[in-house]
Amino acid sequence: MTAPNEIMLDLETLGNRPTSVVIAIGAAAFNFDSNEIDTFYVEVDSQSSIELGCTTDESTLKWWAKQSEEAKTILNSPNALPIDEALKQFTQWLVSIRQKAPKMELGIWGNDNTFDIVISENAFSVCNLPLPWNFWESRSVRTLVNVGQRLGINPKKEIPREGVHHNAVDDSLHQVKYCKAIMDHIKGVSVCTQ
Image (cartoon, rainbow, N blue to C red; front, side):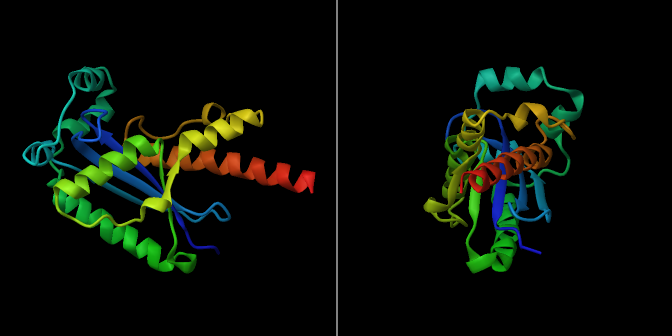
């Protein structure tokens, strides 16, 4: 089996700016060439981020108020960790995945790397913690989805959604499914044109 070498990162936040408060970190480690998946999930105490200068956004708070009761449980989770502890646990998990990955190289995917990845980078920075990936490992799900659409497919809309919408690990797993479907299609197109 090919070890996971891609990390699908998803954050739940209280804003959409790079400085936004993070309230959950979810991730799925996967490989485009196997079905092996490893997941990570942690809920984050919003006050710990606010104390470090992270920001909230009124429109995002209003958006959360309209979400399902199941999704909103995260807003008052008794399991939430301080942001620095959550990031340390995420780093430990990511390092364990990297150690098993071919050549210890990873791709770090965000639904958009200008959201999940940039907000994560800010969180690591305000906590004075080293970033557990290199800038060149950043990947964008939206770019891959756009490539799929140009090839005439849109599995993001076609693959049935499982789990809770706006649960960080469930969102990560769904993104893995449709990204793998797009990549399989690209590989098929490539084989047909050779």
